[in-house]
Image (tube, rainbow, N blue to C red; front, top):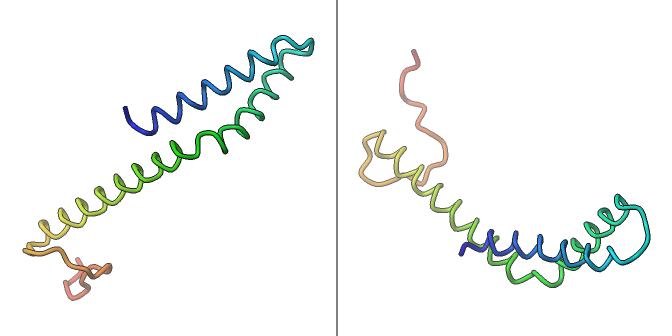
Length: 96
């Protein structure tokens, strides 16, 4: 299971648990939902730190893979054997 799915399900689970606890209190339903949202967000900051960090690492790895693949494709289209480390494309080509 991906880290993003685990973290999302954890956030939803915390929201439902806090809402169930607030459901016993006599107050407006909209206020219960808003309090459950705020309390579950605060709790998830502390309780789900590991899953959040794991998700961030997973997303950073995916971004790095996309960046590497993009550079590989650019160099292949330019006819280079090795990808260049120059972030700027060459400007010596005539413009049309």
